[in-house]
Length: 520
Ligand code: AMP
Ligand code: MG
Image 1 (cartoon, rainbow, N blue to C red):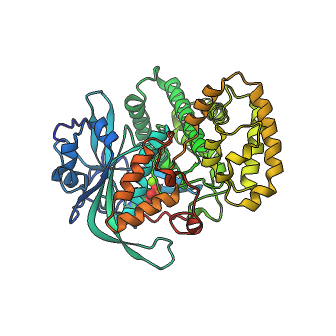
Image 2: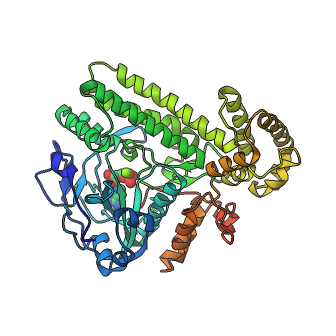
Image 3: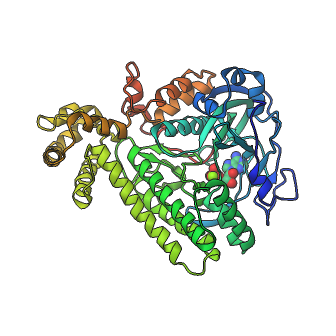
């Protein structure tokens, strides 16, 4: 751990807040504030990611040492760390919310590995910062497990994401009113160490823009391009335009992946959008089980369902339009920004087509016709209550010529509904068989292509909840096993059938499984 090399460019190259300490304040003219993590009574390592430890060059012995839990629980500082909280704003549920900032995330600094990779390490739940507003700066075990497990699972699913190194229990109980209904409960606290090359968000640019601080805005854009997009060349407006286009493209790829694996972020506010096009801020997210484009896991979103599964592509576009607006002072006219937004639509369509082709086992996506074929399937899946993950995974095993549904029964939540739609599925399989017949891919390759695009194991909400129930009783085996299974989401793992099962009935309406809140 002592060998971690820090190179804190964010602090070195960008203006900071002259005031120190955690007292709440508006911070203008600066993008960060010095703040120390608040110590916790009994830090204990509950889980860690071998892959992330390897990426940072940390050995198993270092991870197991008592110092590790001290450092990643926020009680001790490694040499080279200069802890800070970042300042940013954002649009929440479509409305400008002003200054938000890291209310409970404290960055330790930027580690540069021997391979030359940059990882900013951030402790989430490490105590109050100047941006904590009404909050206590802490995080509960339940939400920390959700962030820790899903970050690493997403990485192994091939979805761009921030990462997580460790989960440390704090030995402290904190109070949360999970559904904001006057029923608070005391819950164990935890700290997750998360990692990403950059935690700059769309909202990072929106805040200086909202204050008319074009100087700071330009400084932040220049810095972000230099540090996070070094491959971009050129200067001035042309460089900014290229950068925005790249952000649009990465966001398009990201959202296409979410649609591929059935992930619903749940709070796509602009402060929860990484400029790198990574999934960030795992809160009341959820996984599609019975296919339903209208579903949102977030109870706070239940009324408008702004963040429903099927709306994610358009919400990301809206968020990008907020970013475009925020950086518009750096442009003479809106054309390059409009071009970037148009590119988002084209790039999403392209990525989504490519991924959908892989899911269906087609060698290439034939625009409108294949779009119709897929839409017809999705309509049937929604009407017949079909598990998205199990259906697509099972599709590579069916014999399209002989009773294809017989191999997919396990994907249906309701037998009666399956029977009611049997005719519809049979017609669809006929169309699908015709389409496959015109596709040159040999059967073996088709199957491999499908199985690489259709995961078998995803962090289903109820699987996470079971792991959380165990952890709250000090039994971490559920978390560890889930982590192990989710390291190989595309590979069938004998003995792990329970992790690839349909949602059980008990989970249909249980808090944490079908309903989640922002309270974390
Ligand atoms: P989120 O909904 O988690 O993206 O958070 C929105 C804003 O609220 C961010 O500025 C967070 O840092 C802040 N926040 C959320 N929970 C807490 C908490 N327990 N203590 C302090 N700030 C918080
Ligand atoms: Mg956030």
